Image 1 (cartoon, helix red, strand yellow):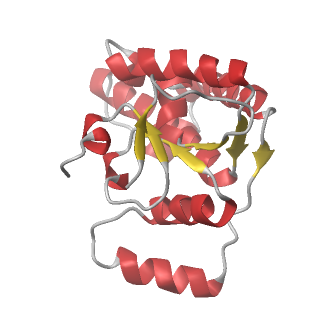
Image 2 (cartoon, helix red, strand yellow):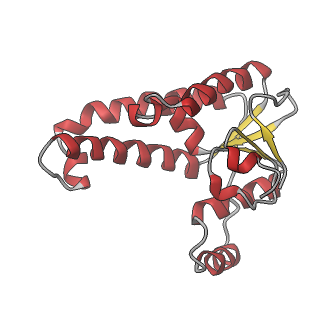
Length: 186
C-alpha cells in the first residue's frame, strides 16, 4: 500500500482526490466527531490546505450519503442518551430532527462548495462488479462501500484521502493521518 502523511503531502492542482466521508465528518460533522478530537483539527486544517492548492476534488453520492446518514445517526444516539428512547425513523420525523437536518444541510453545502474545484465521479457500478464485491464482502472483513470507493479510485486514477483503517491493505494511493495506515511494518 502507498500511504502518505496528510500533513506532509505537497498538494497541487494536478492532484485528483477522492475524500472519504470520515474526513468530511471530522470537518463538518456532528460535535461527537469533532469534540476534543485531534483528527478533527488536523483534517479540517488540511481540507483548507487542499482547497488552497486547487487540487481536483471528486465527490459522489456514496460519500454524501455516508456523511448524511452518519451525521443523522450520531445525533440520534446523542438524543437517546439524554431522552427517552425513540426509533430512528420516529426521531427523523420529529421536530427534534429539524435543526439537525439544517446542520446536515449546511455541512453538505460546505462539502459541495469545496468540491466545486473538482468533479462528480460515477461509481461505474455494474451487476458484474456487484457480484465481485459481494463475493469479497461475504468474508466479513470489509465494508461494501469501501470496495466501491477503492474501485472508483483505481478506475479513475484518484488518491483516496481517508482516516479509515479498513483501507490498510488497499492497493490505491492513500493520504491519511491514521497511524495504522502510515505504519510501514503492517
